[in-house]
Length: 366
Image 1 (cartoon, rainbow, N blue to C red):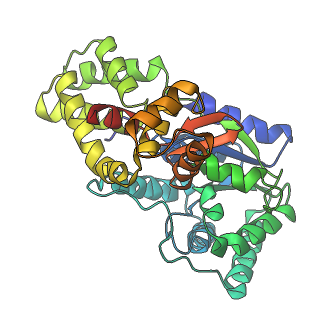
Image 2: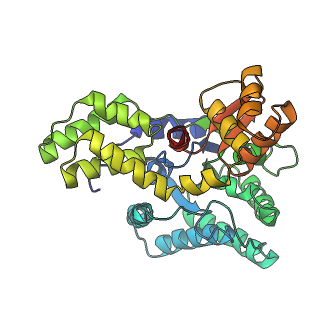
């Protein structure tokens, strides 16, 4: 929706100040899907970076989920073309914002998160990628390239992508100071594999930074826009409660706002509608069907912050499933949940939920 972007300029400036400090030339922003990372990168961080003499280059590794190197190649080629034509990067960014917004509107099926036919980039592809970055670096003059790579965790989801991960690390290593990078990722589990496992080429190469949820100012922004632009008066409290119910997802919150405007719906009616759309789009039914009974129990326990190895949970598993409530079975359930990116574990015993709305769906199945 035009004019409804909630700017987070202070956050963008904070991330850029970290690069300026020189602690690291490479940062990673981690948050679950539907939390607004991509539009923040394109609408807040990249324009702010331009103001301080960066050349922002945005690439999504999900552009071709089976060949992520193609997304990088295309992004650098577009940046070179923009410099050659002396076009403004603002225009290029606006095109990418439009593409991101349109793709977000294609509801009805879940975006694929894992490659179904992964391909290994050829040595020719990787050499071409390196040469393109050299060309861009030469054309950049006194400006610094800021590589903005979306869904970087994709590199750790298949062994086919390991050559690209090694090549990207080498490309950044030999251009430190000339090329900086900010990565985003929507799976803490796979990001952890990429950045914190000793065998990974990115081991201890990237500093991870938090991507905070939208705060009360976002809700007040929506309330004021409804009142000023559409003469719709809605109290802050029900808007905030709906936001919490959708696990603070700005993407789904905007769907709620659209329904309020177009259908003259109450917040309660709009929330019911959006939850139904969310269930269909995210395939909650299919996910729940594929989960074993013990997986559901463990997922709900982790969602509520409970100890998955407690005596109470073991007894519940004994009582409600056909498997024994023992530590090994719980551990296997956790492994399955990690594998399909329903949860993440960065530190031992510390779990995160990666699927907004899934908890509410499972609870309502009871």
